[in-house]
Image (cartoon, rainbow, N blue to C red; front, side):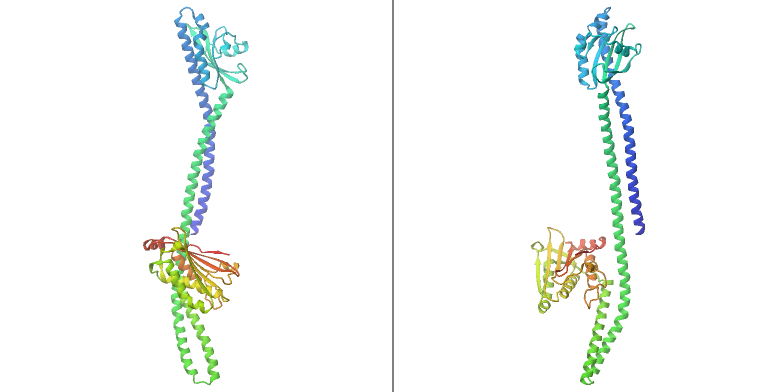
Length: 474
């Protein structure tokens, strides 16, 4: 069992390390994803933009070739048939600021914005967009050409017979592109964190299942240790009771012989000796009772399972106690929930009677100045049966309430302290639970919960279910 405690600690540490590793891996992957996402977006925008520029160039060259010998006139009239395509290009992509064609002289001959036709490109802008002449394609960053946003101007030369006749341009908004990168980066991070959360949940679930298995194994070990302890106590009890019973029986026989001889003594001497013998005999009987209780606690008899009617068994116990309680001026009250009618449970009848009678005997001693014993049984829906044994006696102090089920603990002057221990043992070995509530001056209530099971289920329950702890409530 100590090994399992150590394993549990190691499992908790392993779970914590797993969380840290998963978080670190996910964060690293997220950072890598950020860089990869930015590069992929940049490459995609560049590829798409140059593909559109090639389309613009091809359309322009197709028109120029349709008018052989007059490329300048075809270029000058390009806006008439190219403007709709340029405008739709800008409208369909929110990162595009403009799409245009500029003649070799710097005049805008086609533009997505019709107001820019036949305007001259500013000299400082022209220098920036023409520095790459001779290249197949190029891109340059410009400030405040169309609006206040920074743009990246992508350009493609339009060559006719080896001569540059125009350049096609598309401007991409840097802030819009940054926003697109941020959006896609956020989506990538969100997916990574979803994956990380799933991993963490898997780790947590695995650790939880392992912890539950360890906890269950520990409880099984505790139950096994308790059974082994009781087996040892049973062996000790058997030998001890055997060694004690014979001398006690001999003492009782000698007491009976001495009583016969006392009759020959004078009256006063005979009465005094008889009184002493009675006290001796009561002590012998108490020792015999203690030996029998100790034997029952250490080596409980085998259950004789049978289906019992809950209401019938409670009524039978009440009838059995009625005469003695009336003789002592005490009342007995039955409270049977209507839902209990017809409900059965599987248990040893003799043991259930022993439990109820033992609790009733405790209640009887607690109500030395009168009171009422209430025997009840309830059931919620198809749940377990709950028996209650409640008295209106003196109650149990809070500081002693937690010890009521301990062996050799008793509040009776002549009690052996094994009654409630045996009750608890019987209840738990029958698959039930027991709890106690008490208040000084108001009384004590014991509640016993038993499952409603068949004989086959009951035998299965005895094998797999460890003993449940009792509960005490002030």
